[in-house]
Image 1 (cartoon, rainbow, N blue to C red):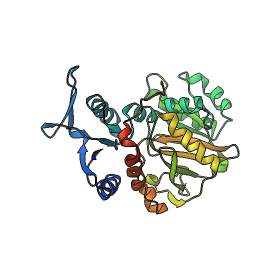
Image 2 (cartoon, rainbow, N blue to C red; image 1 turned 180 degrees about the horizontal axis):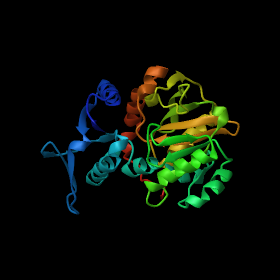
Image 3 (tube, rainbow, N blue to C red; image 1 turned 45 degrees about the vertical axis):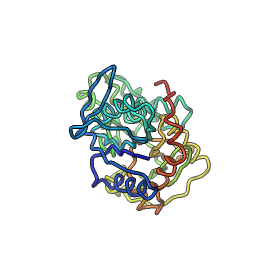
Image 4 (tube, one colour; image 1 turned 135 degrees about the vertical axis):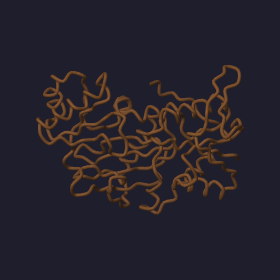
Length: 305
C-alpha cells in the first residue's frame, strides 16, 4: 500500500519509526510536511498541494499533528479526507480537534461514562469559592483547556493562590471556557500512567513519575518513566476513553486513585518514547492494524460532538 505520514519531518522519532516499520511490511511510504501544504477549497475538486503538485492517491494517511499546529494541521487533514474519501485515515481531523480541547474532551469522557477527576468551569470570578467547594477545596489543579505537555497547568495549594491564578487566567480568556478547575488526587503522589491504545487494544503502558519539585509527570518536563502492568479494568477504561474521542490511535493518561482509574487526557498524537521505556514495538502494532483494516476504509465519525 501507499502510505502518507503527515508530520513535521523525517527527523521526528515517531515518524522515523512508523516509516521504518511500514517499509518492513512492504509498503511505500512518503513523509509529507503538512505545514508546507496549502489547500485549494473547491466544491468540484478539493485538493491539497505539496511542493508544487497535488497530493496523489494514497491508500492510508497517518496524521502526526503537533499540538501547536492543530488548527492548520487538522485543516489540511480535513481537506485530504474530502479529496480522498476512499482512503484509510488512522485518526480523523474531527477526532484530533476534540481531543485537543480539554473542556470538550472532558465533557465527552463523562458522557461516555469514563471516570475523571471532579472538574468545573465558570466565567464568573465571584464563583471561585463555590467552584473550589465543588471539587473538594485546595490543593487544586487549574488548567488551560488548550494547553499540552503539562504547559498551562498549575497547582494551587491555597484558596488565595487559586483565586490569583484563576483571575490571571480569566484576563487572558474571553469567554471562560478555556479555564478548568480540577480536584487534586493526593494518592497519585506525582505519578500517572500513559496507555498507548491502537484500535481496541492497549499495546504498551508506562508509569510516569514527576520530579521532586514538580507535580507534573510529563516526560517533556523531566518526568521518569517505567513499564507498568495495567489491570483489566484499567485497560477497559483506556479503550473506552479512546473510543469516546473517536480515535484509533491514542495515548490515554490516567491516575490511580481510591476511586479507580481517573482519566486526565486523551492524546491524539502520542509520542513513541514509550517504546524506549517499555521495549514494545508500538510502531509495528500500528502498521499491523493498518494491514488488517485499511482495505475496509475509515469508519464514519459517530461521536456527534
